[in-house]
Image (cartoon, rainbow, N blue to C red; front, side, top):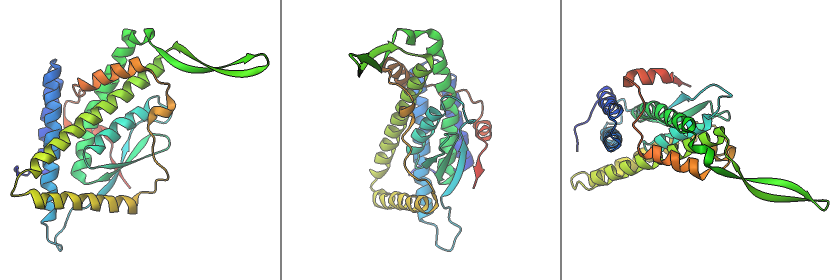
Length: 279
């Protein structure tokens, strides 16, 4: 088992990895630093879970909390893809989410350190996603792409639907790009988490107790979410608000694979910019 880091030291270490990723132009190095950040987050989360499992009943034991994560001002384009990015990161870090109907904020449920990790990764990756989509739109690459639309025509007095290929609007291309970027980031982080947990469970001395602790953590979070959440229905993501553009999705997926993590100079500053609130 690795040496347990305090929450402050954990965030400092993750911040260092983010700065290293931001400072390299080599996409393979950036990929390695992103993976290292998620590996550190997952391993530290496991360590903290094991520590919580050994706290005596009468001692002060950390419990799940709910935080409000501001996403953006009402009416701003792209809020759903921003939410998609946070939810994808949260899924890889043991944090559950409810989404406001306006997509202006996310209700995050989890342990403090896990939510802090999500916030750090989100702040960095959001900057990268927006910059990458801006570059894609400014390059004009989307102009040669098309999107399928359904048009209604009158034929011999009847209304007939016909599918056509139409030019992709810039806003449609941007949404498709960001959706694919967020989806790819979620897959990358989930793969790293699965690998780290498999390695940890393979350690003979801790395999059984770790499996029990991780299961108990999941149950505790599940029970907390059920008793706290007031959500009605399930958030279905941004897909319903955008036409499908294969070319923009491919471009976004490529950018997600090579994400170099934003431009936040310090993790502490990035967390402050999110303006966490509690209910």
